Image 1 (cartoon, helix red, strand yellow):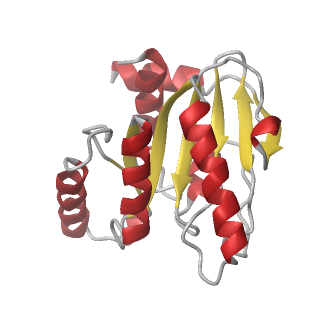
Image 2 (image 1 turned 45 degrees about the vertical axis):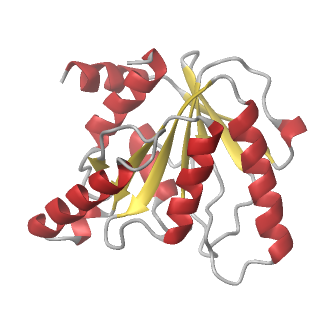
Length: 206
């Protein structure tokens, strides 16, 4: 509860769009600590970010894979929230996938102020191969990441428990995966206080 309270305080800071970057040269030079959000297209990333900030800062596209930039949002003078482009979208041009992969690799390897990646996974589907591939990439980059299950309100309570336990066990196979999972629902507000608390812990190195 203490972490949730601290997390709530974090998000009282005003939110401002800093910039979108489609090349490493465009990354902000601000040295504020960062937390990043990644996930498959249509996983509900924009909705979750908006639920966290209480503002429509992240725009959801009706076309999966349309967002090709890494977007940086500054929360007061505390930290930056980083919205990474969705991956795993269907019928994506090979060149687009390659550009996205190179951009993300560069960000993950070279961003010293990055404290944690929150990897969003649709609770209805669980971890897919493309998610596992990203997890392996994060393991190799030595970047701490935490799995966040989205759209949990679409499942029965028994199904929530089942996917939670299954994903927790799968996460144990990855060296850089943080050993706690959070079930969330942007629509119902489920898990939002806990996620804010997790962000506070990440920023403080707890």
